Image 1 (cartoon, rainbow, N blue to C red):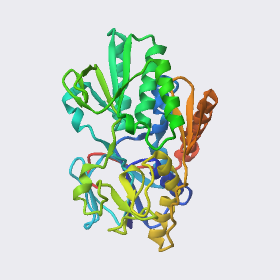
Image 2 (image 1 turned 90 degrees about the vertical axis):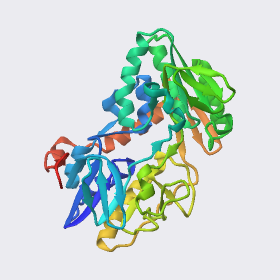
Image 3 (image 1 turned 180 degrees about the vertical axis):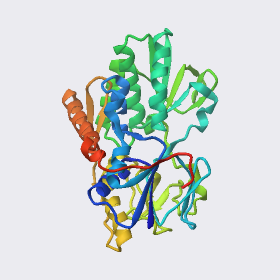
Image 4 (image 1 turned 180 degrees about the horizontal axis):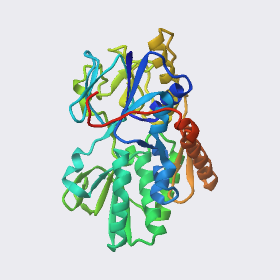
Amino acid sequence: MKQLVLAGGGHAQLAVLKALGRAPLRGVEVTLVTPEPRQAYSGMLPGWIAGHYTRADLEIDLEPLARRAGAKLQLDRVEAMDASRSCVALSDGRYLDFDLLSLDVGSEINTSSLEALGTRLLPLRPLGDFLDRWPRVLAVARNRPGFRVAVVGAGAAGSEVALAVRYAFDRERIDGDVCLVTSRDKFLVGHASGARRRVQDWAGRLGVRLHDGLAVGTQDGLLLQNGSTLPADCVIAATGAAPPRWLKVSGLRLDERGYVAVDSSHRSLSHSHVFAAGDVCSREDRHFARSGVHAVRAGPVLASNLVASLSGGPLRTYRPRRRSLYLLACGPRSAVVSWGKLTAGGAWAWRWKDRIDRRFVERHGVPPDDASSATVQIRHGDRP
């Protein structure tokens, strides 16, 4: 039996599971390694923070997907790998050998400058940890007048989260303050000036204060670039992505930032039996934004290429579109449309985003009859 290991349950990997569910592989043992049995869809996170969704609305149950794909579900986290020996190490020290590996473990958040905050620090990733901790933070805010939340990050995630937190405070009548710390020259970089202006307008309308520049964590809050101190009871880190640290010793060829270097088929440039998609990898032939949009679109190509690698068929190429559509949530049920130089916004944009997001989650659900028609082996703590 050949061993196919799917490391991570990211957006691209969901497409792999769906494809295997439609046409299970013969003579291949498939193992899905992921720390949580449910995968949260990041596109709906701001809406969840704002109170528009329940947690169940944005979570995809991986167990029925694994059952239908004939995969064994390993609830664990990949902590290391040796590409030359074709094995991955799990968090408890066990190893899994593979003939073919698909990496979709996402990226980490670089919080090195904020570590002094201690328990006040709340990184957006891992997403499951954030989903567990945020309700507890909100409960404290309800009972502590003047509760201060600072969001650090210049990208879309930081802006959307800051606006969602402010709206949640207003919705629940929480006496609190919300601010966004971001470098002016990096604020929503890659988006048109019209989109940036619309998001800034929403910040002003909701009362989210913007602080320009870098910030360093202290025991009491944030030390800003201008030398002033910004007190904070909770600092949400939506700072730039960083590759998993264990990739440095994986033996894989990496790009200059430490991400897995892949070709147009999302195959490793150094090890042909390793594929990678999503935030963990970087295309060497062309650059495009690190975004869930590309992870979703690359998923079917990844699935096809894994099957082709096992059967000896031709590989497909993922060709990203010249422009990607972004729908930025703005707290209440309103969103900003950003597509190249074109921008718009309003309640209709939120309804559009809501429909797309809900369809994505629903598309990866499995009907109860199909989910119960096969078995899944959940390994956690035993030796394979």
